[in-house]
Length: 175
Image 1: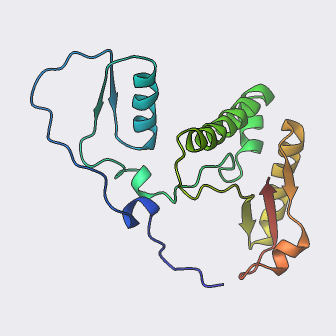
Image 2: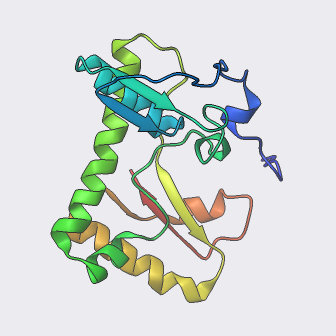
């Protein structure tokens, strides 16, 4: 497998979005959304669908900040977070975090289908790997958190360790 050392962001690798003239007059709107990343753009779009007049403000270029440097991957797996959420907050909070992320994934799929957007949207399992044997216990605690929260997934099978082009001591998968 040839993994690029410095992969280019999807957003930076494609045609830049339209640029707009600076705002140089007063506007009266129902809602002002500050930030032209994916969250700001979707928020402004959803508000406009609800009949609100919306101003979307971006200080630089659309999709250029945090969003600009992402891979365009949307997931409910953000490193080994669920065990931390359970310990720091509680089960309800951790489950709400998971459900909100899954709802975002569902929203993207539904929107792409509804608007017939050909964006190569695919659903894949999400993995977190470690090459350090001392991290195995941490990943096992995360798998326990998955079980507690009813998250589909858990410790990845030995075939993952065999079929990965780098050394893997342990891995967890979210399906």
